[in-house]
Structures are given as C-alpha cells and as structure tokens.
Amino acid sequence: MRSFIVLLSIVAAVHGWVQEPSGSTSFTQYSGCGSPACGISASGYTAAINQLAFGSSPGLGAGDACGRCFQLTGTADPYSPSFTGPFKSIVVKVTDMCPAAGNQQWCGQTSSNTLNSFGKEFHFDICEDTGGAGAFFPSGHTALTGTFTEVSCSEWSGSDGGALWNGACIKGESAALWPGGVGCGNQGSSL
Image (cartoon, rainbow, N blue to C red; front, side):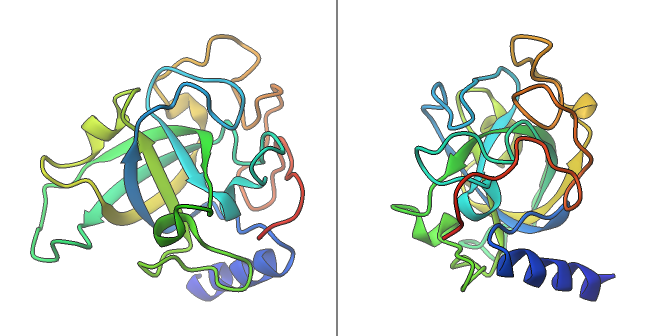
C-alpha cells in the first residue's frame, strides 16, 4: 500500500499539484484567518494547507483543497523530540493556503522538491481564531508532525454560513476524496 501512495505522489508531482487523501504532515498555527484564499471564512476548526497541495497560486482563487475536510493527528514535536504527548486529533476544513513565499520551512514544497524542511510533503497551518490551534496543540508546543486523513465534512463540527459550501468545493459541488475526486479544480500551474 505504501508503494502505491508513493507512486501516486510521484505521478501527481509530475503533473503539478501533490494532493493525497492521507499521509504524514507537519503542523503549525496562525492567526488572521478572516480573509482566506478560498474566499469564504468559516466557524469551527479551519486550516491552511501548503500551496503545492492547495491547488492554486496566490491571487488565482480557490484551489481544489478548498472546502475539503481532514482529520489531523499530532505524533511528535520536531523541536522537542523527547516530548511524548499527550497528542490530539481534530477535524478541520481547509479554507486557506499557506503560500510557499515567506514560509519555505513549512510550506515551501515544489514539484521538483516535494518535501518541506521536516521531510513532509504536506503542511497544515491550523487557525488560532477558530479555536483549532488551541484544541490541537499541547500547551507550550506550537509546531508538530503527525498524520492526516481526508474525511467527509459531515465529521467537521463547524459552519461556513450556508448550504452552498457543504462539500469538497466552495461552489457547492460534492466530490469524491482525493486523488480521484475533483471539487473546485486546480488553478494555474504548480511551483
């Protein structure tokens, strides 16, 4: 199974964006989540995903990650390797992009180098404003590594303000999980 996922990652990277239904990832937190790249803010736990997975470049609008929901589970602190937890899991909705420019350490993955500084293809920047960061990060720890799994947004306990944004796209379409399902579609070309 692992070799199948690696093969899918290689195929996706060759075609541009790297979008997978599960894998290993890094996590940080940010504030100022009121004007997300997807164009619609939400209450409930939300996150930005790294640009290569988001599916759009800054200024080009919503990428295919917009409106998708993921279960995030922390497993380690890269800055405190001896810390053994406790770690938590939460479900977030992607509403924003963590751009590569200015965030190379965490979100600088490119199609030619798909790993960030912590050896992860994916990164989720969890919004502090919606409470996700407080529920996810152990006290005194603001950066973690762990896993993610795409889940149905019925598992997300937030609101996006209306019935038009309840699936895997802000346009209201519902899409199958990655890598086969297309929601908003990708915009432009990858890094």
